[in-house]
Image 1 (cartoon, rainbow, N blue to C red):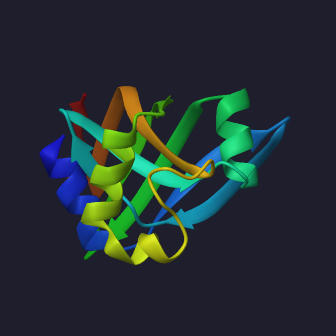
Image 2 (cartoon, rainbow, N blue to C red):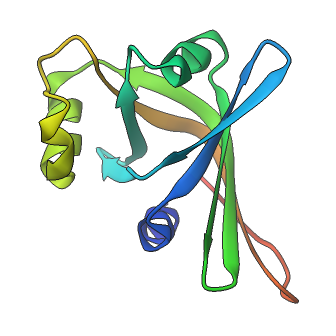
Length: 130
């Protein structure tokens, strides 16, 4: 999992895919932190992406860096604990302009039953589960 998180950090921006009914939705994300042994991302509860995840928590992430990419498939689980939100905000201080650990909007989610597959041009795929 550490390798997956480090790779997403190198990407800077990765893309999160959700579904809305039968329509796929993809948007850029940038947060990826490990807290209490789980890989977390962050968004706002008022956003459509949050509503889509709550309706169908199966998501996929794709990130590309330097000729290698990762696809992460799994289920996101909301963690409403203040400690999880504080950890995310401390590790990503730029978010503090828009979010706080005690507001009703900040949402942190962790991956459950995730599979990350690393690919490169000409190389064999390699899979990590967490």
